[in-house]
Image (cartoon, rainbow, N blue to C red):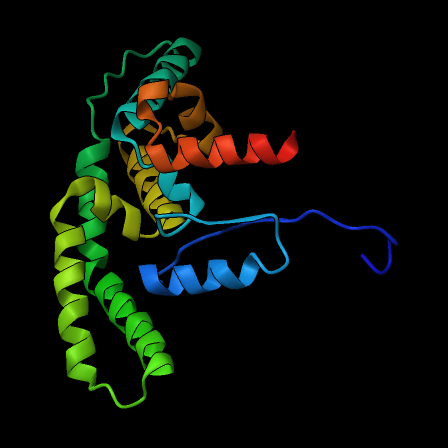
Length: 193
């Protein structure tokens, strides 16, 4: 604003990483001191919005069909993204849980240095178990970028193909968009107008 000599309207959009709901509220409150709006995703990072098995499977089939046309082969692929992403999630579960606990403990200690670590960890484990129980929320806490990289490694090995973020987005239907993403799009649209 000093350089331009005019007021600048800012809209902050942040990845959640492993922050708790309470920490996100505090960060958003701070951002709103100088931003028109601030949104912190409900998922770890923006790429998590792409972890929609139906859209991924459509994108994979398009890629394999295209590859078949170019090579003259007749490779068939099954809907596999749920199985592959579930496998990835299980492989990183302990890492995700340790990050989840660590970040929550750090924030809780910032608020109250006297609180016992075991008290913080106990509630964090209950919260984590609740998130991990459901596929959609489990997909929201794993690394989205890493999950897609893991998926593409599998696709390269099995089908000599991969899917890009753009291919997944192109394969998405309105019903594939979670409410959090729809709300983000509406907020950006309102900000722009």
